[in-house]
Image 1 (cartoon, one colour):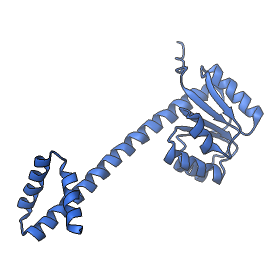
Image 2: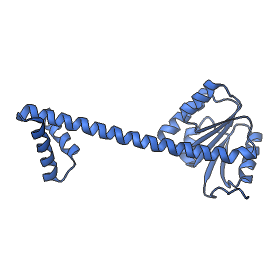
Image 3: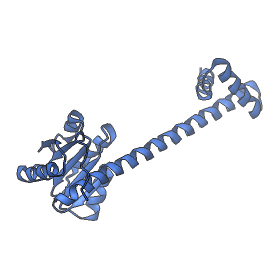
Image 4: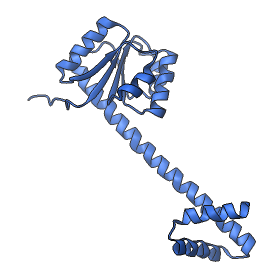
Length: 197
């Protein structure tokens, strides 16, 4: 049974300060069907490179992740989210946790071989997609919670200043929203703003 090839449009960024090791990994990637590979030794300007190249996946090979590398990975996760695969010799649990906390989606111990590359890239992409879904969902719930707090505050202000019951204040907000064809949250923010003034 033939192994399916990756899409040729998938852009990989390979980072390794050892030119010899980088050449080996680049050949392994090409043997696995990854033809769109940007190869660099630039660990020191990792964030700038990712922002410029805009790869689909970043692969980093090193002996052990340094603190400044992990800080750059955190910046990538926050400002230029990208799946990251790290191949490292360091299998210390604390190092692995620090790498994952920094945004590494797949941490592979030991040297890279032809068999491990594609599963590692697939794992990183799947982990990254799951993280993005969870983050999007968390942001949605946070927005809903903030909206609910604003609506409750607007109701409380109307109850206090207009001497209304909670049901009346809520109906008043809904009527204002319907009359102006706006969302309830936007009307609530307007009410809060008017009483702050």
